[in-house]
Length: 206
Image (cartoon, rainbow, N blue to C red; front, side):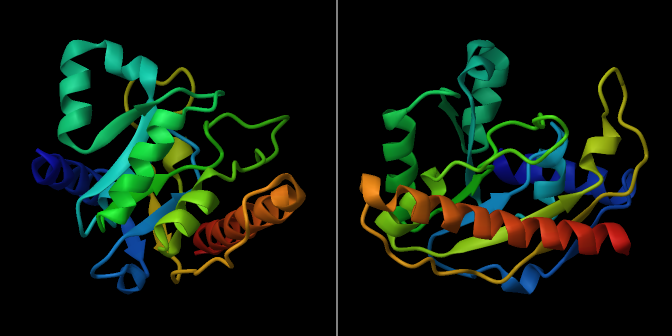
């Protein structure tokens, strides 16, 4: 189901949205990694299909899993529930175990596509701790145009060109998880997001 869904979404992205992907050669061909994305639209999943060269797993808000048919599809394509705005230890542990098994995790540290007063949201540090616990790299991935495909109030996707760029894998410095290092962990998360938004600017300038 993952590859069938990926094929359909990839075809839709390339034909209807004229989607383009750059830097796919930066994706590790084996082993675990965390693909970190900027989240701006429900259409981000379509853009992700442009760079999904291996089966990955993604966190999705738990409310989506209350719809039976949707729940079946989400699980079939590798998504698992997470309680937003809460410390969901179960989802966190599940994600770390996936990485330790050599699998891929797609994650959006901003948590939601909504902005705070039009500004970027402060990224959460969960992915930083996951990367260190699983001893795997973080791959920054920038997406552009997805927020214009299905803007608020729209019922049908607009033919807006979307672009995705994959950055080089980053090995974050290992830092002990304690209160004294809380700000250092936050700085690592923001460093990755800064890299992503620099690539977003590059995509929008193309």
